[in-house]
Length: 426
Image (cartoon, rainbow, N blue to C red):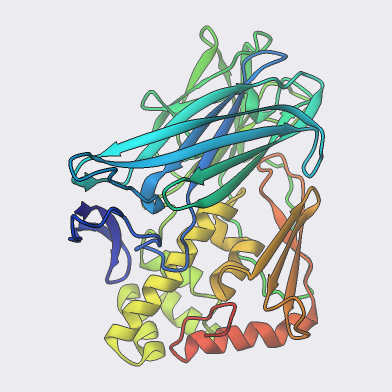
């Protein structure tokens, strides 16, 4: 039984495909953990909300099949994955008031080869204009007997927010809001009141997060576009060509900054693009001199190679550290990207260095990440407060404290001694 997986080679700058044989008598055709990132066995679930009218919203759902389990019902049949999708539209996150709910089943058929791809579906919810909601989506991998959750906010207080726009790239629904330079994207709206949009251009390169014990206040995010232009809609749609870098913020109301944001990232995103970016996101482990030496080195690839070989003590150990560290960078980019790459954010920084938390708690105001047993006095708790900005609803700021200095340097030193730091300290 063959399956196709992405594997990081050398400095994780290129992706290749490998093949693995399993006994045909086994009914499981794919592993339960990611080959690319051994820290994650999460199922990637993406969702896009599009308001089709004042009382109805369409939800487009995408499930990446990389960590699904495929089973063969009998020796003559193909392999199948089985997903049970259920959803509840709530008045707010954590509310017991259910506005709408339903469920359905998806089957994905595969032959002897299971390629990494997306499984897509859509459903409508009864979300009326004038209120905000919270949509709780549950995806159950029936073969694996594992449940995954995906929650999204449904914004329906006005007709100008991002969910009034539907983005397509190459005639397909875009489940991500990042694209390549020169990509032409098509954006449509069901809001007949929108006939022209303002496109604000931002080209600023945002700094990486400061250490969790830093008491320096983060730079204030100011709405100051580098340039602006107007676009007329043709029918109910318009087209945009993505810039070389930065992002566009699209709004239909001149006095309101709410709208849709689309970003330009390298073709390897959410992975690491080149040696320069590898050096940047390794800043968490480097001292100031090491970082400056690598940034100014004539051969940046050789410099970052040497850093990891020195840390790992051997080429083989260095490769393992590379895979794990930049695998976390990729996961951070997937889940914590806001108006900047996920690894640069507060949550991304903690995830990359400490790994996935032992426990994670969410509410409407933020998230709490716990490392270690709750009853252990040495357990570390990071509190992230959700903050509003016009570009993203995925922006969280860490409550910094001097008490994080010892846990931070313990984790960093563990990496620098050639070990992958996990929440259990192994």
